Image (spheres, one colour):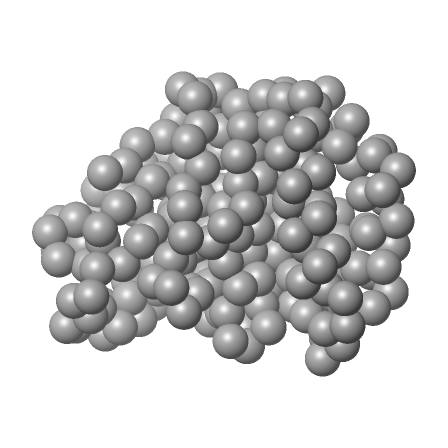
Amino acid sequence: MSSSSFAETPAPPYYAVIFTSRHTDMDNGYSKMADRMAALASQQPGYLGAESVRGADGVGITVSYWKDEESIRHWRENVEHKVAQESGKRIWYQNYIVRVSKVERAYGK
Amino acid sequence: MSSSSFAETPAPPYYAVIFTSRHTDMDNGYSKMADRMAALASQQPGYLGAESVRGADGVGITVSYWKDEESIRHWRENVEHKVAQESGKRIWYQNYIVRVSKVERAYGK
């Protein structure tokens, strides 16, 4: 989930989970958790890639791409991921919003 | 399209255009164009908001939200926007990918 690379997604349709977050000032353990979750996500069935950017103002957007809704549900219910989600809500994220969407078309350069 | 605020989107369904870009070193005129396009987009029919983050490494993610596909098509064909798109491809973006997706559900804190 490096911010310097684009996800190499297949031809649509597939799913995108758009995660927008505003971080608190508490960074304690966040980077380590984020790296671990990125590695763990990439091992899940149906994972297609991710793109992640965090600005200087503490707002971040991470988009992860998945084969189907079942893959997303499976990842959301992963036990280690659930612990990280709870820590995120309690410690690291002042606000966040998750949007689950179906990619219908894609183009670029 | 401030990076410090979340888009206040309605209940799904609606559309998300996920724009991931890697910028060149040429920043000449980019900020002014980006501000103008953000203002212009916000005046378009069906515009629901946007979230935008750009990291120190030149990679940016902008997600704009729209009522329906017709709104997205209308904005893509906007004459002033088309000029900006061409400049983006020619000058500012080393790579980019646009993914058009339908938001099916959303939740957050």
